[in-house]
Image 1 (cartoon, rainbow, N blue to C red):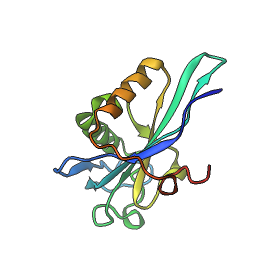
Image 2: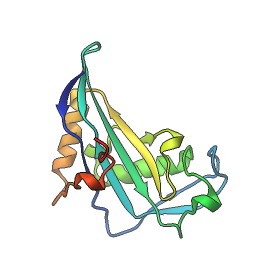
Image 3: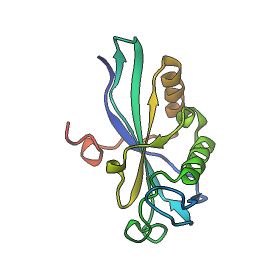
Length: 157
């Protein structure tokens, strides 16, 4: 692999109207049906690399959707993880905010990455056009403020 980009993260500016995504209660970790308010989205961009065996780029992007405990309590309701309706609605809302940034589709990460106050998801960009579209989406964000390393998932690096 050849490094082509450094790691970085930012908090996505959200619209004034609340982001509400509904669960259908059909996930493996919860049977709860409810509207969940997303109050913060952190986007973490990992190192981009070129897969020299297949000769294509690989860029992993984590998308963490935070929710207040009053909206979803993991101790009481379980994990949102694997709830297909919630993921579908979250993808639709993110595409409405920035289709260039989130157009490649967001999916859940593994179960062990889920937390008490956020849903862990990711995108895997595997073509130069996808990465270029993502970069255009980044450029459309006004006053983008990158987080300091100590406030990101990259503090271990």
